Image 1 (cartoon, rainbow, N blue to C red):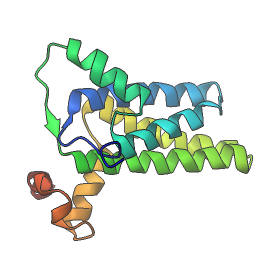
Image 2: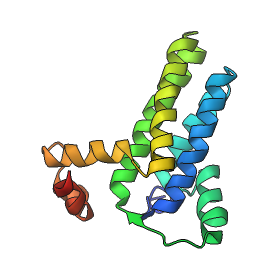
Image 3: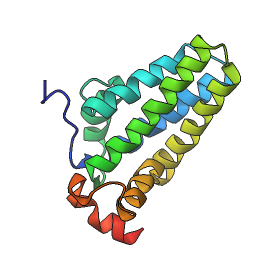
Image 4: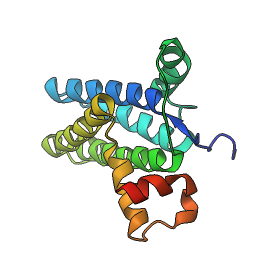
Amino acid sequence: MCGLLSFPNPVNETSARIVAGAVAVLCVLTIAFQQGWLIPVLAYGFVARALTGPTLSPLGLLATRVVTPRLHVAHRHAPGPAKRFAQSIGAAFTVVATLLWFGFGEQTAALALVAVIAVFAALEGALRLCVGCRVFYVAMRIGLIPPRVCEDCAPFVAAG
């Protein structure tokens, strides 16, 4: 069970950007066509990636096993704990959006949360700017997250 709930460290940024791009597209489709049924699909993906990396995530598996290996580019890597933190934020937003849509009938609020995810995913996919990772590094810098959580993050924490 521990092996299943492990998260890769380091994370291939190419795969992360592919997943983020797909998430951004799914979010835009959810909002544009008001397809609430896609919100739990997004939530499942984020929860799966936060818990297991790509292991239980269809988008994660597609990115890591099919798309990324076929790209002939120099792959960069990023510390896993920061990416896991970012996936956890996405999981929280999409789970709350699912509850808002299906539990409380608050479609506008749910779509607003999906829009936030769309923006963050688009920034990651298009510009390699992981907002969740930046929050993680700031939390480390101010002492909310202890250094032992991610020793590989030190250069990113110092760079700000």
